[in-house]
Amino acid sequence: MSESSKTCEQALQTGYFGPYGGQFVDESLKKVLDELTEAFLKYKDDPDFNAELTELFAHYCGRPTPVFHCRNLSAKLGGAQIYLKREDLNHLGAHKLNNTLGQALLAKRMGKTRLVAETGAGSHGTAAAATAALFGMECVVFMGEEDIKRQHPNVVRMKMMGAEVRPAMSGQRTLKEAVDEALAYFVENPDVFYVLGSAVGPHPYPSIVRHFQAIIGKESRRQCIEQIGRVPDYAIACIGGGSNAIGLFAGFLDDEEVTLIGAEPGGRSLDPGQHAASMTLGVPTVCHGFKGYFLPDENGDIAPVYSISAGVDYPGVGPEHCQLKDTGRAQYVPVFDDEAVEAFMTLSRTEGIIPALESSHALAHAIKIAPTLPKDKTILVCLSGRGDKDLELIMDLKNL
Image (spheres, one colour):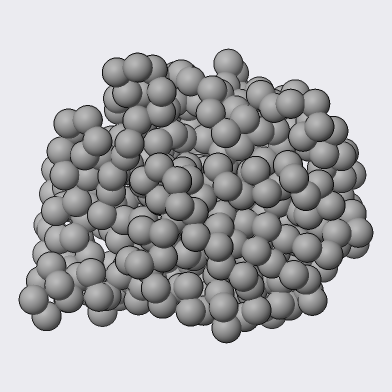
């Protein structure tokens, strides 16, 4: 077992990934979180719990999702072979359902009947709404007012499935504020189960999200060995808070020959307020109940952030990613808006697959490095979601 894997196992008990993570909350919330930790540790390896989750993965999600060889794109680039882990083919078109099903099953075991969630691009909110409908639970989703405007199709989907969508009206009115208001609602309503969507927040949430999203990496590793005959040379995923990336990385942490890369939102530029590149320019800070890399402003407060992609414009990154950065086990690189948009169009036109703008950040970095590598090298990209929700934005940008 690698040091990274040992740290993750320790975090299940302590909440700390190296110097990151933890529970920076008041006593009232700590009691609720400790109850959640106890339930998670009780059920995560329970045969009946996992049998129910496995059945849902197979018959509701449609797992396993395939690994697809982009032969046309690889030939066009003339270098390494690019493969996609097709989380866009998961039910609802993104990886988020892996986590909401697991958390809702925990809620069910704990006797909870009401869910609250936050969402940026709407994929997690949609997954939470669907899961609530499936389990007969009430669901409230907080979403920044700006994100409601730019991701309206997902808002409609949430409402169609019975969820109440509440706009977050403070600050920049995007993902950070949605998390702020969901956490506040959770504190005020301790009988509600908070379905946190990314690998962030106070312990045990980073460990919970990682645990349920690890299905991505476990499947990917097995599928690559079956299709390629070995593990990939590179595994790349987009990061905002980092849920799909930590899910992919979880499958390869002990394979030192696999280079792990997180592609974060470089936005318009790396000037203040024009990006959300927390790993590139952030500093260790406590926010939303945990310690991680966050972007500070000149006063030491959390800085305004921006990305063309609503799902990654969060000013920090989950604690396990921070630990992986510090130990050098994973690399993190900024990808700019124009690169992500170009990757979106390139994959659409070479393979007939329309990616989410979030996923396009990871794809863009793969497109950048593939021509510099020999043809016998392989790059696995987590295609975390499909691009239906981004079509209006792309239509305007490209005059389609």
